[in-house]
Amino acid sequence: MSKVFFDSSETKTILMSANAFHTLKNNLYNNIGSYKTKGFLFRFGKEFGIESAKNKSQNKDSTNPVGKRHSRLGHVKDVIFMGEIVRHPDGQIECIDTWGQWVESFEAELHLKNYGLANECVCHMLCGFASGALTYEYGESIIAIERKCVAKGDSCCEFEVRLEQDWLEEQEELIHLYQNDNILTELEMTYDSLLHHKKMIEKISTFHSQLTQKVTEKHSMDEIVQEAYELLNIPILIEDIHGNLLSQIGLTERQLETINREKLQLSLIDDKHNVKHYKGSTYWKLIAPVLINKNNYATCSFFYFDGKRMDENDHLFLERISMVLALYILYEEAQFEEQQRIRSSLLERLIHNRKIKGIESYYKFLPFKLQPPFSTGIISVQKKKKNNEIIDIHDQLIQLSKLAKDWDLPCIFAILGEEIALLNSQNIDKKSWKNTITKIFKKVEKQNSNYKYSLGLSGTFSNLKDFERSLKEALVAQRFPNQKLLTDYEDLGILGDIVMNMSIEQLHEMAQKTLKDLYDFNDPRKKELLYTLYIYLLNGQRLKETVNELTLSIGGIQYRIKQIEDLLQISLKNASTAAYILLVIQALILSDSLTFEEFKR
Image (cartoon, rainbow, N blue to C red):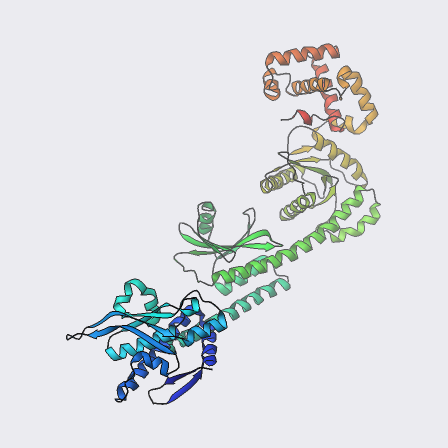
């Protein structure tokens, strides 16, 4: 095993094996990184070279040139040195074509043995040794830089020697690294860096623990965010995926207005560690997603106004807040879904005609008193454009339940086939209730821009024994084709009573007598004429509106109306006849016996 001798100025000699040097180098790599290790080893070698040159000058009998001292100390087997370093009469030093080779460099051998092939030269200590010795000998900063290295697959370890000033244009970064500091300062920097890193990890861990404790103690989102703000003193904003405010602290009304106004005008500065960095006109913003099962549930943001500086570690705290909020949301979701399941079970029992007495035990699970007057609703969710997407009715139910909770509506929801049933309690002011539920559906439509909604509402009732009838009323109202978001059964008047009080057989018998040949709904041509009649009557027999809706010419409409009058043996100029026919067609639609879906654009 090769030995490397290190001489001190006290003429003592420290013996270090190649393996010990490898251990030193490996620890440096692991603690300060490969880049700083290069500078460390160069300066280590340089001081060693300076001491060696001092000893040579004190030993007047020594005739070893600087290069040969490498081999004497065990660094290399031999050194080949070409060119010359000249001291001119004016004291100026000049390096003339000075280069050389290290034969069997111990640094290169160690690297190959322990790390394999390198992608750069590795003999930094040898460069430092040569540089230190030559610098001391000539009194001018002289630097040796390795050009070729056996460790990276070259045939030899070759170095070039120049004055420091002559290297600057070509190797400024490397020279800066080599000359930047001494060993002690490098170690102090490493220690300070590690200490800072340790303290930061402890601070982040404590921060995370404090916020997590808030969740386990069932604190609200506002309380969790307030705790984070008190610890960091950075304004925080939490929004759902639709941009709705969930919680905020540390921001003024004016700042919130600025944030909302500039949402689409921010410039993306950086995107890393799952955190995005934006710049606004008067502030900086850090934003992180709140992820649950890789799905984004919300966003968490830090804001920096009035020139406040962002710390390089702020993204770590933001990520911890996002993680804690994900835990909070997960807990809230589980709790809410369990409550919703119990509430839905109550409504499902009513739908399936269970005894009222058996249902009353469920009342205690409701956050409000289930008391009259009641009303029932049927909610339909349809896609605006046909595609292969499947509507998640359960997700729609959860969205509606949350909004109803936010608006303090005393109602419960349950899935009924492909629709959602609604039971509303304490419906004293029906007009106010309609206004509130309309606002809720506007918000749901905004959150689900690909869907359209329609709600059929029953009349009010006081006894849950009348629930079954009210459900039928809601179904009839929901089917009414008026393209409105909300249809109240009580607004249908006699039409609603006809559908509710006549059997399907009676209704079809009445329709057959009234519509005659147009009663054949399986004949495409006759059904198209029936649809023309329906639109014509729905528009009050006004040709212009009918033309716009059917995209036919006036002549085409008139021709069809003449055909229809001949088939039905009536005149549509008779107002009562026209009104009766419209009533019959609408009754068929409300009873789900007739649909014109295929004609809708």
